[in-house]
Length: 341
Image 1: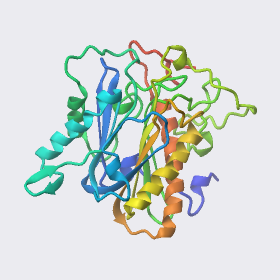
Image 2: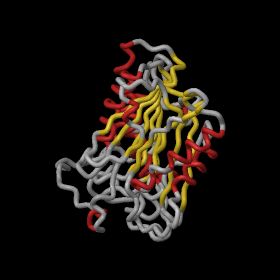
Image 3: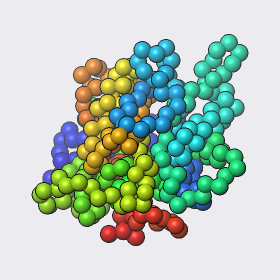
Image 4: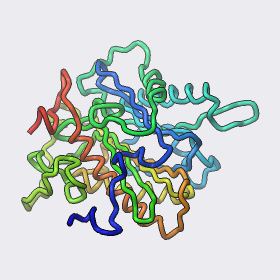
């Protein structure tokens, strides 16, 4: 009997996506000519959230206000985007749409949607960069308009459209767990690291010990020993050594404080280090947002298992992103399936 079938075991939610956290909506927008895109997460009401950055080269917007000592209590949406610094403008497109809907922090007669975001570098992946107007504001608006509860696609879509790992195409991934006490935890990630989510040879995933069923191929762990070898990166060989970063959102329906969300974001980074080797490098901007909708009562003792589940969900989501990536014209790296090893 597998661990996921044992009494009291954590199990994936019905969709095995971050949208198993009730009330969350995810929207993706992609531009195949750009080989880039963005992803937005929001709910029907503002949510508690915080963030932890552990990479050496982050690109962010409005993340300082998410520290527990800052006065902002909740935010309206979170954005993951390609495009490096240009991609931060996707947050503006989301803000435009939320303002039009009357969503945001009210200060006197003014409404200010609070939309923190993070970006990855995909500007040298073979996509067009000849725009006269920054396209990411429009992509942000499209992602917001597309935001829905329920199922959404993984792989080469949204913020993962043009993502590349050290050896293969990256992408957008997600996974979830329902804990024994009924709390749901989910993760969403755009995978574009210096390192590799795959062991040498690119067939097996570093995250394989945490796989549920065959959610990313079911091949199991790499049986070889002695895998502690330097990465010989295909991406670096294309002079893309700075074209990196893994950015993620973990979410729960538990009622957490802002400080507890900060601790959740820190714990979730373990999922990146378990699934990508190397991770948190000087040339990555590795970042995790953590949000809580507050629908389910929680005690301080619940935070440790929620954090552990978030890390495992994030590791699985990273592998699912690479597993689901699909080939496109002009790709610089192969996919794990269909065009890969």
